[in-house]
Structure formats: C-alpha cells, structure tokens
Image (cartoon, rainbow, N blue to C red):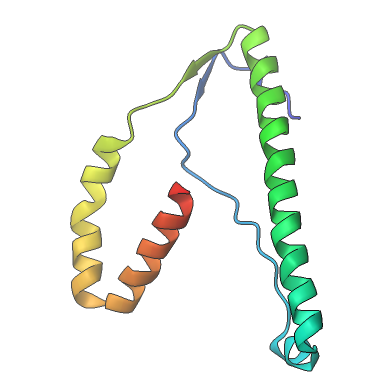
Length: 113
C-alpha cells in the first residue's frame, strides 16, 4: 500500500483509470493444446480471475480504511456530467467506425459488471 494519504487531505475517487488484467497466450501454443488442455486453461483463468478480484477488493478495503483512519476526506464525484459530455464523441465514433464503437460498448459493459 502506498502512503499517498500522508501528503494529501483529499481523495477523489473518480475512476479515471483502470488497470486491465490481461492473460495472453500465443495462438501457436493455444492451437497445440488438446481440447482437454484448453478446458483446463480456461478453468484456471476463471478461477484465478475470481481469486485476483477477491484479493484486489480486500486490498482496496484495507487501503480505504487506512485513508479514513488518517482523516482524509474521500470524495466520490458525480460521473454523469462526464458521461454526458463524451456522448457526442460516442455518436461520432458510431457513425465513422462501427467496429470501434462496438468494441467500446463491450468495454463499457464489462466495466459495469
């Protein structure tokens, strides 16, 4: 845990960034796996994803507790004005590049889950 709270009085939890957890495997290696091995890898991915999310949530809760105990004011800004401000951009992307728009929608849906 970092000690940012030692030098600030406020935290703004605006979720301006997200760290994607990505598991990559070469197509060549994947194609060399048997169907059973592919199933094992997929199961391991699901299990490790759930476990990592649990660990992340626990670490986040611990960090927020330390922040609150340090007397830091935590601000959760209303994100709706930001969503409204970028809506014209999404509409433009939808017109100019439907595939990019579709990908952006998938990312938004995944982020909401």
